[in-house]
Length: 129
Image 1: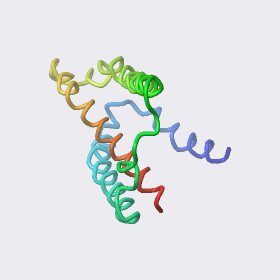
Image 2 (image 1 turned 90 degrees about the vertical axis):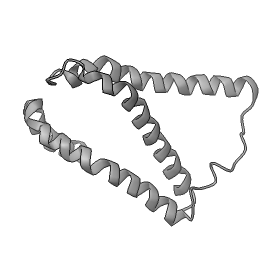
Image 3 (image 1 turned 180 degrees about the vertical axis):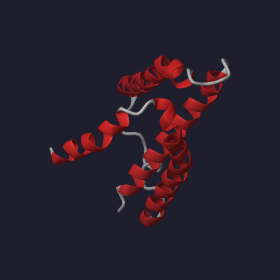
C-alpha cells in the first residue's frame, strides 16, 4: 500500500501541469525508452543464452480450442487499439498540421507489434534464468 501512496505522491503534481508544458518530458521518454527496451531484451536474451525455448516448442493446443484462443487474443489486442483510436484526436489536437494524425496509422501497429515481440522474447528468455 505504501508503494501506491508513493506513486500517487510522485504522479499527482504532474497531473496539475498542462499537457503542452510537459512536452519536453515526452521527448525525453521518446528518446530514452526505445534503447532501454531493446537493451533490456538483449540483456535478458544474452543472460539466458538465447531467446528461450518458446520459439522451439510445438503447439500444445489444437482444433477449435486453438481458434478460440486466437480469437480471444485478437479481441484483447483490439481492445488496446480501440483505446488509442478513441484518443488519437487528443494526441494530435496540439499539432499545427491538421493531418498530423495520419502518421499514427502505420506507426501504432508497428510499435505495438515490436513491443509485444520484445515482451515475448524477454518472457521466454526469463524462464531460462
